[in-house]
Image (cartoon, rainbow over all chains, first blue to last red; front, top):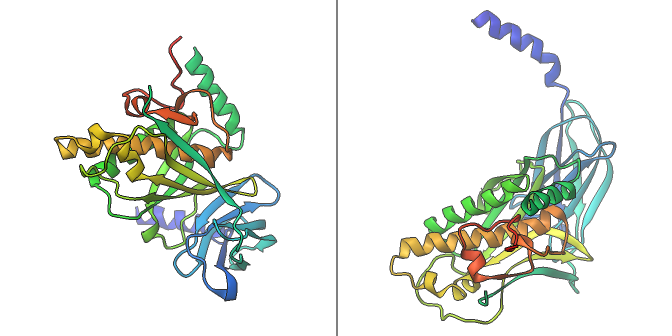
Length: 120
Length: 189
């Protein structure tokens, strides 16, 4: 049984290094961290897309990315959206990105509202 | 037949990139600690409604986010007010806003709000239920439907509403409380 597991590990080894890592930080005015921003990471050449939420320090870390070129975008209400084009993710080499999204003074955020009525 | 057509229309709107069973991370952020019974019923109701139109929800809490879990889609939902039947809020027959989703420069953002106190005010029989636990479960089911409506806006990237079912702009409280009410519910023919 141990021998089978060892062989499986050996066979899988070449695959382990074929995925990349993307780390990043989202900041607002004055390099202040923006927590709870939604970061959308999308491949440039396919429809592949993932979303992740920044932590309290404004950081995010997305692993198991196929190598390639990505677009990284951050959004949050009351902030101007920010994006970085053509971020390259390579095998076994973490890519890093910082997105700056200043606060919007005159916020253009509105909302799609859901109403109810007690009338049947 | 009309119900089948509605399911088909949602599938078409999703497009080929959003196959059935798309994973959605929904991050919940409660302004005040909710009733556990209400929160459980809310999650169950919303998950059921979203599954019907091709989305599989993974529930998370904003307070526990470490910034290292990715999803095909992600939505942050803030619950404003107290999400529990307390028997204190005066009822109203006014048209109230129960939930909303942020829109900036015409783009729907993945941030929604559910207004728990407003929901409680339009459901006096729930708010003042003799059995508080049953009231919380009933409240949770309605909150789940309001949440599902907001998720619809985010996941389809639209501010538009449909003519029938959960994606309608205005709902009656009777519909929100009914046993069988979903995105594909159609009016009586």
